[in-house]
Amino acid sequence: MTNSQIQFFFLLLIMLFISCKSTKTEVEHDHQSETILLRQPYLQNAYADSVSILWITNKGENTYVKYGKSGEPDTKVYGTVVNEGNKVRSTVTIKDIERGATYFYAIYTDDKLLASGDDYFFRTEPDSDVAKFSFYAMGDIGEPLIKGGFPHITSNQINNLERKPDFGIGLGDIIYPDGESSFADAYLFKPMEPILKNIPFYPALGNHDWHVDPNKNFEKEWKLPNNEHYYSFDYVNAHFIALDTRDGVLYDAENQVQWFEKDLIQAQAKYDWIFVYFHHNGKTCTYKRDYQSVIDLYPLFSKYNVDIVLNGHAHTYERLHPLDASGNVIETYRNNIYDYPLISNGFIQITTGAGGKIKKNWKPYVPGACMKNIVAANAHRGHFSLLKIAGKRLEFQAISSIGGEVLDAFVISK
Image 1: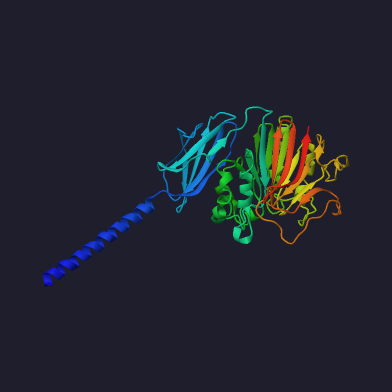
Image 2: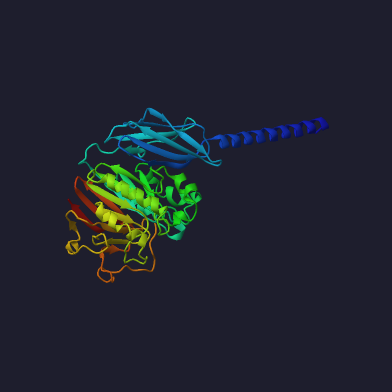
């Protein structure tokens, strides 16, 4: 081989190397410029005529949703983006939609279709005050699988119900261990993905959510009414109030209690049902202590016709006999724990705090064994609670996360 041939051969190799490197760089550049869905869409603030849809991508400057009653949504609504550097949060609020309807939706960022199909839908609030609806409640959810958590199992059980609930409420400790946004996807949004994309979720803060600044974490993940720490919303003939019990002492206590009483006053005679939910328990026979800041709210529950109080914190299930303003059992109902009439001047308190983890090596008190003698029913199993409303009739079930057995059930007929 001559020198000129050798030089030509090496020149050819150099050109091939440059070409391959250029192609690789272009491929890498194309991949970096591609819009990728980092968090599946989830529903917030689903009211009579509006709903918000949120999701997260790696990049994006414009975002919108197409929605419609058929499987091929065609009405476009633009939203807003918040760029956090390594990820972009999208929020689209759809307004002026029909009550009592089912809509399918598709999400887009920078004109790229990111998610659509039969599983991407939302239902609007029924248009009749006597319409039937249901919701689920569970607390202490976002525990990692590697530590024995099971939010994915509970989520699948809810997803497999014959009729999906219209919405869900979270009873605090939404993301373990410290409520940090950096753990939100792995510990909560991914395990609960099957239900969050078509069932709106309204969480309350727990003590673990307070380990870091919730203003920089909790509020960033959710789009909730009022100041997000304590808020209320209506659904058909029911009123729902979420409170923030922080670490067992109410957050912003004076203002929160004033707001709470005012909200209760405004709800009187407008709704058939009033539900209050938060993280810490009041009186209990679980392994948790009694929290006086919650017990101090008992007079308001009783005075303003609160029907059911739901909390988490204890990773177990416990239903108390109806209590009065002083926290004493209303003896009239002690022997009729499965079929209640209207409960006057009293309320039922339920701990349903094993949606994602359970207290190991602990057995609940059997009813009557606790010195307070306040327990109507309990079960130490992973579970969620399902409440069905039909006019002035309420059906309650505590359902096992594994197997779907009914652990406890009762009805209230007003």
